[in-house]
Structure formats: C-alpha cells, structure tokens
Image 1 (cartoon, helix red, strand yellow):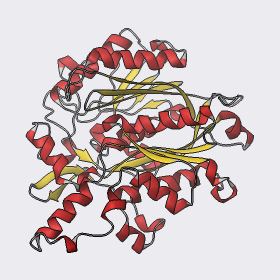
Image 2 (image 1 turned 90 degrees about the vertical axis):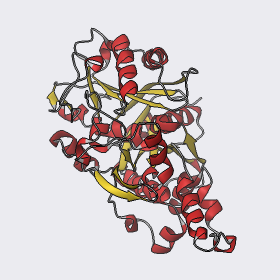
Image 3 (image 1 turned 180 degrees about the vertical axis):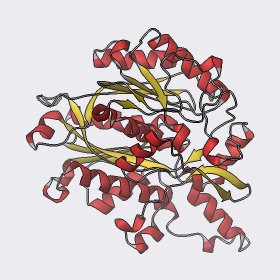
Length: 414
C-alpha cells in the first residue's frame, strides 16, 4: 500500500441535460432549471428524456465520431474537461501510471439495436452489419475510447454497477491509488441510455416510466404524484490523486474521498431493501471515522418511483434521524436519471457547497408524500446552511447493489 492513503478530487468535467460545466450545472441547480424534454424513440414515439448538448467535436474528429460510440464521446469530453480543470499537463505525465475507471449501467444496446434495425431494411442480410460493431459494444468501450483519445497506456476498464456505477468508479479509483496501481485516475460515470428504446420499453412495462404534460415536471422524487423515472444521458469524470501529490503541485482540491461502501440487498431484483441501504451508509461512515451527525448533506438516489423513494427515505431516517444539521436533497428532479452517470453527476452538483454553503433543493415537490417526509429535506428552494464539511452521496441500482460515498472538506492548511 502507498504511504499516503488520503485520496482527493482535483478536477472534474461533466455534461448534464442542464449544463456542460460545473458552473453552469450548479447555477441551474440553484436556480431551479431542469431542461428535460420530449424525444422520439423508435417503436415508442415520444418520451421524456434528459439530453446533453455538449460539442463532441471539441475533442474528436468526425471520423472518430462515426467509428466510435455516444458513450465514448461523452467519456472523452468529460475526461478532457476534467484534465483541463485539474491544471495537470497530461503530456508531461507517465501515461502508463494513469488509470481510467468509468462506471456504466449498460453498454452496447444502442449499437446492437441500431444494427438490427439497419439490416432489417435489407432482409436481415448481415453483409450490411458494420465491422465496427465489436469494438463499439465491448464492455470496456467507453474507458477504452478515452485511452485511445488521450494516449493513456495505464489500466482501463468500465465498471458495471447498475445505477450505483458513478460512485463505483470513484471508489475503484481511490482503491487503486491506495494500492499504488496508478498515480492518477480518471474516474466517474457515464450514460448513453436515452439512445436505446429497450430501456424505455422496460421501464414502461414495469410501470416505472414517468409521464407528465411538462417534461420539466416529470421527475418529481418524494412528491405524492410521482409516477416514475425520466431517463437521461450524461457523464461526469474526475481527476483523482493522492493528497500528497496534489499538495506538492499546489492543486485545487474539491474534497477528500473519506469513506465508502458497496453492498448487496440479496432480496429482490428491483425493490430496494432499506435495511441493507442503511447498512451501506453506516459502513461508509465507519470507514470515514465519522458519525451520522458529522454529515452536512445527504444527496439521495431517489428516482421518483413509488416504492424506491419510500424505501430509501426509510433508510435515511434510520441512519440520520435526529441529525438536525444534516440536510437532504435530490438532483434527479433536475436532470432525470442518468443511470451510470447519476452518482458522479449528483456528487458534482453538491461539491460547490463546500465553497458557498448552500444546499441545492429537490424541485417539483408540490405535495410531499408523507412516507418520504424528513425534517431537513430541502424542497423547491435552495437552503443556506453556512459551513458544509461533508457530503454523503447515495447511489443504488437494480439487482440490489448499493453504494454510499463520503466526500469531506480538505482544510487549506493541510
């Protein structure tokens, strides 16, 4: 194990439905701006979705876009933006000591659906099947496209962790840095989910796809009238380093990865288990050497499904009940559910609270579900709470995977 076990975030790049930089994203979270919309999906017609509008040509050539994937483009954009934000000179680094760890919910469905549709126009003649299919659909594709674009020769892989994947990417980075397997990590989560009809059809047939006259009001966690998920694309990638390395180069530090846990419900493929979720949060606190009352903000996973929100708030009450200075919010009400990117994006939306002391709200809560009540739930308007010292970020996923990640303030004198 490396002599320093303290791991910090020093840069980030993101694209979300309501912002392509942290400053824009944060401004819209504090201003109540959602920017969800209706899109047409093959076989289904119009659905609500969160769509990103970043410029993929900023870091890729047109040929690379044609040969690669949307997930790869999201990853490359976020990785390049993160490096620029960190102040690192990538060309001066030993690229064999840079690791890329990206969380995903699913990958390859978009390309497979598109190719099947394409050959259906030619009586299913496979000579019309693209020779780019295999590298596009392998599970390591998004992280691999990053290494090709940046010339990174260190380890890369994607982490399939359902909707806990964004947290899982950061946890993997921290572990690899602590083990000395790399000296810099690019880590987070990405999603291209809105480009596959299968995920929309699946949620619809589960009765879990949101419907509302206004797409910007469709994602409404904790509201009595919530009726499901708004599927979104997006990405957020961080530069992650050992504290001593970051301090040696005078880096800006967003926060320290202080604690984490990933566990499993082992009870149901879809319905969350609040006992296991509470256990996950407690284990993350124990690793960080913290008590529940030490947490300033809990960012919830809540997706706006009926039972999912109730189960999570049951767990939050079990762990943080009585913590008068721990405030609870949700980011999906603005951006929908960005699947593999969700945890990483939702953490990013809260990190500026270390500087401004403001908790962004959960919006679209017109009639709070009594089963989701919590005394310090921040609803519809930002809450100025003063000093923020720590954030606990929840991300949970299908097949009962749970993750909790704690980021804490790093004092300027350390």
